[in-house]
Image (cartoon, rainbow, N blue to C red; front, side):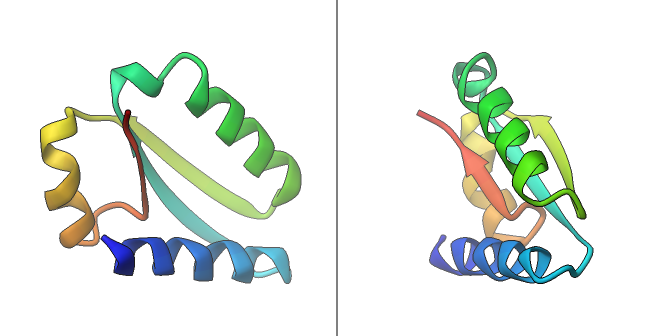
Length: 77
């Protein structure tokens, strides 16, 4: 899990210096209405070169997605 967090930080830092990249975000239904829209809006505003790909998943698959490096950030309650 910490490795996934480190990857996300590196990608955001790269975007901050003008590098283009993609961050894959997965989220659960519980975070879909408030947290995800706020995060995506803020990231798009601060890092316009950064491409965000977001998708809803079941909470039970998040550990596997992170470990398989199929996502960079996971949002769940």
